[in-house]
Length: 462
Image 1: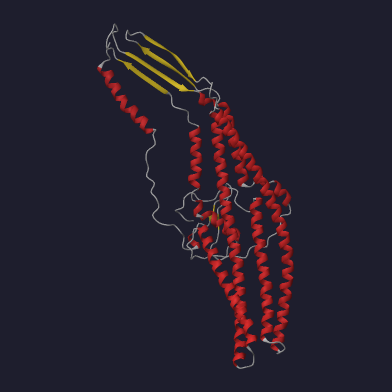
Image 2 (image 1 turned 90 degrees about the vertical axis):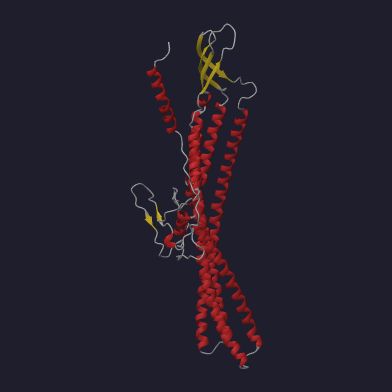
């Protein structure tokens, strides 16, 4: 019995509808053009400077970039603007794509065959049709998805650690620039004093009131000081260029830096050191990586289950005898029982465990080393401060003696040089102490955002 004309028309109308529904579920191409120019900011006001709310219901915090900024604020600005953090969105989305991939089951397999009758006693062509679905992937589904989801959390922790490292670089550069500015100002002041003294002695030599041996040491000291100032000024330009690169600023842009706050060791340093694995993003990332690897081991062990496909088949032969029934297809695990994946995942898990232990050891050593270093620098700083105060008092007395004609300009210059040298020692120790505290903050996981704050889109400043 042939189908009616109306039934054939109805079936024909359903074909385009089915095709349209199938195409509606497919992804479509969307172009993503490359940028055609750099996006460096010309001034601090063009930088992002609004921090997202730390918790639900809280208000965002805006940094006043028109005022002097502390090293900690510079670190936050670097997280918000660093060009090297602009890849965060792509890295995170790549990890999330792995979750989608792990949660997809294989498509069922369909097979249709037709054999035309070309001779013999048959009366019609033969048809065969079968439909099968791989069910072995269902066994490892839960472990695969758990491993992928844990990997996403690991990537998120890794990206947060990357933000912390960018902030660390910016804070260290800000500390170095601030104290280098103090050193340059002190050196230029000393150079002005030395130049004045040199000119006076030169005038005395010209008037035959002094000899060249009186002038030569001053000229040598002036030349050495000028070279030292020039070298430090070039290093300062490099530090500014590095900081501006972290902030996404043009090399010529400048920020006003505030003096670093007076640091102090936390009272509960030992307790903070013991709880570092709960705060440090890199340690959390390693923990999550280990959990993901452990789920991969579990999935590989479950993967020993032989490949199994269940389905059904329908057939009609040339005599129009129709048959139907279930089908089962499976591997016979004689030569391969997923040993390769089991060995690989177990080795990966072992490697991650060892890496975590190494990171714990290096963190503990770094914290202990920084505490010792801070103690030593603090003691030296107290002594250097007393020496600088004594030198300043002696220079004040020397000024009074010079005004009364009891000492010459050369002797007064020596006193003033001693003050500059002692002050320079204090500046160097303060910089070393500030850098040590910045390092300790990073090792302890303190003073930095606990969630990622780098913006997803780099085109809209705050």
